[in-house]
Image (cartoon, rainbow, N blue to C red; front, side, top):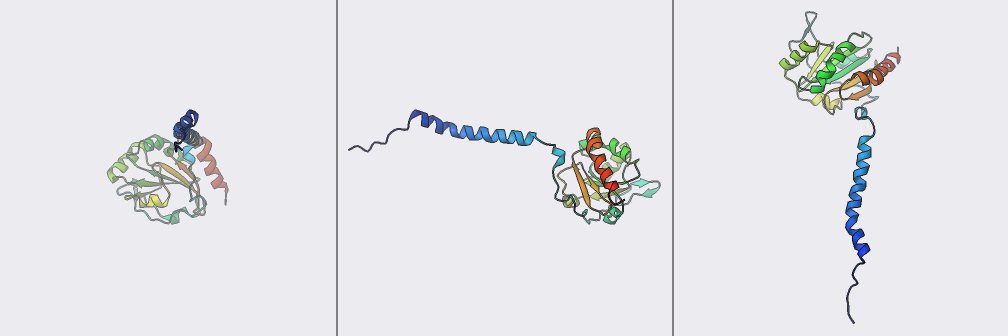
Length: 197
Protein backbone atom coordinates (compact mmCIF):
# COMPACT_ATOMS: atom_id res chain seq x y z
CA UNK A 1 0.00 0.00 0.00
CA UNK A 2 1.53 3.20 -0.99
CA UNK A 3 0.59 6.53 0.56
CA UNK A 4 1.37 8.66 -2.35
CA UNK A 5 -0.60 11.87 -2.56
CA UNK A 6 -1.97 12.53 -5.96
CA UNK A 7 -0.34 15.52 -7.55
CA UNK A 8 -2.60 18.51 -8.15
CA UNK A 9 -3.88 18.73 -11.63
CA UNK A 10 -2.04 21.26 -13.80
CA UNK A 11 -5.20 23.33 -14.27
CA UNK A 12 -5.78 23.62 -10.52
CA UNK A 13 -2.14 24.51 -9.86
CA UNK A 14 -2.26 27.25 -12.53
CA UNK A 15 -5.47 28.65 -11.05
CA UNK A 16 -4.01 28.73 -7.52
CA UNK A 17 -0.92 30.51 -8.78
CA UNK A 18 -3.03 33.07 -10.66
CA UNK A 19 -5.44 33.69 -7.76
CA UNK A 20 -3.33 36.42 -6.05
CA UNK A 21 -2.90 38.18 -9.40
CA UNK A 22 -6.66 38.05 -10.07
CA UNK A 23 -7.40 39.42 -6.57
CA UNK A 24 -4.86 42.23 -7.03
CA UNK A 25 -6.30 43.20 -10.42
CA UNK A 26 -9.82 43.20 -9.00
CA UNK A 27 -8.81 45.52 -6.14
CA UNK A 28 -6.84 47.76 -8.50
CA UNK A 29 -9.88 48.15 -10.75
CA UNK A 30 -12.11 48.88 -7.78
CA UNK A 31 -9.75 51.59 -6.50
CA UNK A 32 -9.29 53.02 -9.99
CA UNK A 33 -13.02 53.50 -10.51
CA UNK A 34 -13.72 54.74 -6.97
CA UNK A 35 -10.87 57.26 -7.03
CA UNK A 36 -11.72 58.45 -10.51
CA UNK A 37 -15.38 59.03 -9.75
CA UNK A 38 -16.68 62.17 -8.15
CA UNK A 39 -15.34 65.59 -7.43
CA UNK A 40 -12.51 65.64 -4.85
CA UNK A 41 -13.61 69.12 -3.75
CA UNK A 42 -16.88 67.64 -2.50
CA UNK A 43 -15.41 65.63 0.33
CA UNK A 44 -18.20 65.41 2.90
CA UNK A 45 -17.72 67.27 6.15
CA UNK A 46 -19.09 66.11 9.49
CA UNK A 47 -19.48 69.81 10.36
CA UNK A 48 -22.15 70.58 7.75
CA UNK A 49 -25.26 71.63 9.67
CA UNK A 50 -23.32 72.21 12.87
CA UNK A 51 -22.28 75.49 14.49
CA UNK A 52 -18.97 76.94 13.33
CA UNK A 53 -16.20 76.20 15.83
CA UNK A 54 -16.17 78.67 18.71
CA UNK A 55 -12.48 79.40 18.41
CA UNK A 56 -11.13 82.91 18.95
CA UNK A 57 -8.10 83.64 16.80
CA UNK A 58 -5.81 86.66 17.18
CA UNK A 59 -5.55 89.18 14.35
CA UNK A 60 -2.71 89.15 11.86
CA UNK A 61 -0.21 91.49 13.48
CA UNK A 62 0.29 94.74 11.58
CA UNK A 63 -2.52 94.16 9.05
CA UNK A 64 -4.38 97.40 8.40
CA UNK A 65 -7.44 98.37 6.36
CA UNK A 66 -8.81 101.92 6.18
CA UNK A 67 -6.20 103.03 8.76
CA UNK A 68 -7.50 100.56 11.34
CA UNK A 69 -6.28 97.15 12.47
CA UNK A 70 -8.09 94.25 10.79
CA UNK A 71 -9.72 92.22 13.60
CA UNK A 72 -9.06 88.55 14.27
CA UNK A 73 -11.61 85.76 14.21
CA UNK A 74 -14.44 86.02 16.71
CA UNK A 75 -17.19 83.40 16.32
CA UNK A 76 -19.75 85.99 17.46
CA UNK A 77 -19.14 87.78 14.15
CA UNK A 78 -20.93 84.93 12.32
CA UNK A 79 -24.30 85.58 13.96
CA UNK A 80 -26.77 87.38 11.72
CA UNK A 81 -24.47 87.41 8.67
CA UNK A 82 -23.68 85.00 5.89
CA UNK A 83 -19.94 84.42 5.92
CA UNK A 84 -17.41 82.93 3.54
CA UNK A 85 -14.50 81.57 5.58
CA UNK A 86 -11.31 80.88 3.63
CA UNK A 87 -8.36 78.98 5.12
CA UNK A 88 -5.19 80.13 3.37
CA UNK A 89 -1.42 80.56 3.66
CA UNK A 90 1.21 82.51 1.75
CA UNK A 91 3.21 79.32 1.12
CA UNK A 92 0.19 77.62 -0.48
CA UNK A 93 0.49 77.70 -4.30
CA UNK A 94 -3.26 77.26 -5.02
CA UNK A 95 -3.95 80.13 -2.57
CA UNK A 96 -2.08 82.44 -4.94
CA UNK A 97 -4.30 81.25 -7.80
CA UNK A 98 -7.56 81.84 -5.92
CA UNK A 99 -6.59 85.21 -4.36
CA UNK A 100 -7.82 87.38 -7.28
CA UNK A 101 -11.18 85.57 -7.22
CA UNK A 102 -11.55 86.20 -3.48
CA UNK A 103 -10.73 89.88 -4.03
CA UNK A 104 -13.50 90.00 -6.63
CA UNK A 105 -15.88 88.17 -4.29
CA UNK A 106 -15.19 90.72 -1.54
CA UNK A 107 -16.96 93.38 -3.63
CA UNK A 108 -20.28 91.63 -2.89
CA UNK A 109 -21.35 93.22 0.41
CA UNK A 110 -24.22 90.78 1.04
CA UNK A 111 -21.83 88.51 2.94
CA UNK A 112 -18.58 88.88 4.85
CA UNK A 113 -15.28 87.30 3.88
CA UNK A 114 -13.26 85.92 6.79
CA UNK A 115 -9.74 84.54 6.52
CA UNK A 116 -7.96 81.97 8.66
CA UNK A 117 -4.22 82.27 8.08
CA UNK A 118 -2.83 78.75 8.53
CA UNK A 119 0.67 78.08 9.93
CA UNK A 120 2.18 81.14 8.29
CA UNK A 121 4.75 83.80 9.18
CA UNK A 122 3.10 87.18 9.77
CA UNK A 123 5.48 89.00 7.39
CA UNK A 124 4.79 86.53 4.60
CA UNK A 125 1.03 86.70 5.17
CA UNK A 126 1.04 90.51 5.05
CA UNK A 127 3.15 90.47 1.88
CA UNK A 128 0.72 88.00 0.31
CA UNK A 129 -2.26 90.25 1.11
CA UNK A 130 -0.31 93.31 -0.04
CA UNK A 131 0.39 91.65 -3.37
CA UNK A 132 -3.18 90.54 -4.13
CA UNK A 133 -5.21 92.89 -1.96
CA UNK A 134 -6.91 91.96 1.29
CA UNK A 135 -10.39 90.59 0.61
CA UNK A 136 -10.99 89.74 4.28
CA UNK A 137 -12.89 91.83 6.81
CA UNK A 138 -11.36 89.65 9.52
CA UNK A 139 -8.17 87.58 9.53
CA UNK A 140 -7.53 85.13 12.35
CA UNK A 141 -4.07 83.63 12.77
CA UNK A 142 -3.96 79.88 13.30
CA UNK A 143 -0.24 79.60 14.03
CA UNK A 144 -0.26 76.00 15.28
CA UNK A 145 -3.07 74.65 13.09
CA UNK A 146 -5.30 73.65 16.00
CA UNK A 147 -8.25 75.83 14.96
CA UNK A 148 -8.10 74.45 11.44
CA UNK A 149 -8.39 70.95 12.87
CA UNK A 150 -11.55 72.06 14.69
CA UNK A 151 -12.88 73.32 11.35
CA UNK A 152 -12.13 69.90 9.81
CA UNK A 153 -9.56 71.26 7.38
CA UNK A 154 -7.72 68.64 5.29
CA UNK A 155 -5.29 71.15 3.80
CA UNK A 156 -5.17 74.66 2.42
CA UNK A 157 -6.99 76.20 0.76
CA UNK A 158 -10.47 75.32 1.96
CA UNK A 159 -13.55 77.51 2.01
CA UNK A 160 -16.68 77.32 4.14
CA UNK A 161 -20.07 78.96 3.80
CA UNK A 162 -21.48 79.84 7.23
CA UNK A 163 -25.17 80.75 7.46
CA UNK A 164 -26.73 83.58 9.46
CA UNK A 165 -27.24 81.32 12.47
CA UNK A 166 -23.52 80.60 12.62
CA UNK A 167 -23.95 77.12 11.12
CA UNK A 168 -21.63 75.66 8.48
CA UNK A 169 -23.75 75.00 5.39
CA UNK A 170 -21.09 74.12 2.80
CA UNK A 171 -17.41 73.22 2.50
CA UNK A 172 -15.23 73.51 -0.60
CA UNK A 173 -11.98 71.54 -0.49
CA UNK A 174 -9.27 73.00 -2.70
CA UNK A 175 -8.96 76.38 -4.37
CA UNK A 176 -11.78 78.58 -5.55
CA UNK A 177 -11.67 78.46 -9.35
CA UNK A 178 -13.72 80.34 -11.95
CA UNK A 179 -15.58 77.07 -12.64
CA UNK A 180 -16.47 76.06 -9.06
CA UNK A 181 -17.18 79.69 -8.14
CA UNK A 182 -19.87 79.86 -10.80
CA UNK A 183 -21.31 76.35 -10.51
CA UNK A 184 -20.96 75.57 -6.80
CA UNK A 185 -19.83 78.33 -4.47
CA UNK A 186 -22.11 81.16 -5.65
CA UNK A 187 -25.21 78.91 -5.67
CA UNK A 188 -24.36 77.80 -2.11
CA UNK A 189 -23.88 81.42 -1.05
CA UNK A 190 -27.18 82.40 -2.69
CA UNK A 191 -28.97 79.59 -0.82
CA UNK A 192 -27.47 80.77 2.47
CA UNK A 193 -28.43 84.38 1.71
CA UNK A 194 -32.04 83.39 0.98
CA UNK A 195 -32.33 81.21 4.08
CA UNK A 196 -33.54 83.18 7.07
CA UNK A 197 -33.71 86.48 5.23
